[in-house]
Image 1 (tube, one colour):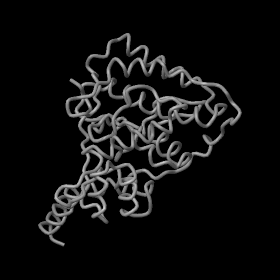
Image 2 (tube, rainbow, N blue to C red; image 1 turned 90 degrees about the vertical axis):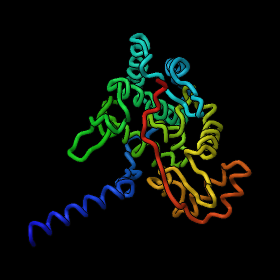
Image 3 (cartoon, rainbow, N blue to C red; image 1 turned 180 degrees about the vertical axis):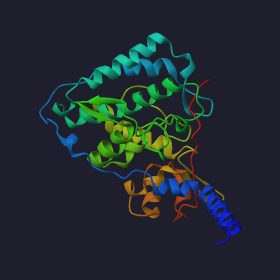
Image 4 (cartoon, rainbow, N blue to C red; image 1 turned 90 degrees about the horizontal axis):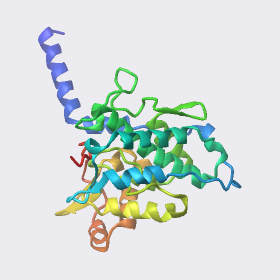
Amino acid sequence: MTRKLSFAIIFLLGFSFAANAASFQSLFAPDADLWARWTTHDGNSTKSIDHAPWSAFLTQYRHAGTDNIARVSYGAVTPESREALDAYLDSLSTLEISSYSRDQQFTFWVNLYNALTIRVILDAYPVQSIQDIDISPGFFSDGPWDATLLAIEGKEITLNDIEHRILRPIWNDPRIHYVLNCASLGCPDLSASAFEPSEMETTLDDAARAYINSSRGARVNEGILIASRIYDWFYEDFGSNEEDVIAHLRQYAEPDFATALMASDSIDSYEYDWSLNDAN
């Protein structure tokens, strides 16, 4: 093979990869891979967890923008608020979460994921996107999701562990995707307060409805169905094919949108905005 031909092949492969980067990303989206150690729980436990410090942080720094996307005033976070956030995360890390009820565990992991994500952003701020925070180990790693961020019951934990090895496989609920926030504009909104077990079922439905009926979740333009890439990366959580995904969308769609979805049997394109959800 000549040198000129080799360069041509490399160029074409590089162009093809760039043009299909989103498709490649979907191929490598983490599977739901159960970490069985975290299935242990106490169904008789009446212990509860205090998430008030996380609610206080959200009340102060999480704001709804004029575009109806929840944003965070990262640049305005004071040293005192940062200390309070660190103390909250430290308090969660000291819990023997395996001795709690399943409902308490669910809100523990969801609140922990969102609070850790905020701390990751604050550690790197200012930054344009969470994808730019390359602290995960490995040559091909991207972003912070595989970096060890703290230990629970002596086990080192990453964001990917929480989402893909604990929440998704143990609870097996597609609505989980609507309550985890990755600090990006394309993601479902960061909640206005900490999640609590007594309200979780309603909260999950409300979060699904809010995202699906926003332009970030899905929309039909002149008969073309455009959906969040979440439904491409994790389609197996919503069913076995795109028709199942669309059925899921219809379940939570407002009447006019549900009617528009009736004419769709496939998703025409996917999109996602990784820009930081920065109020500043």
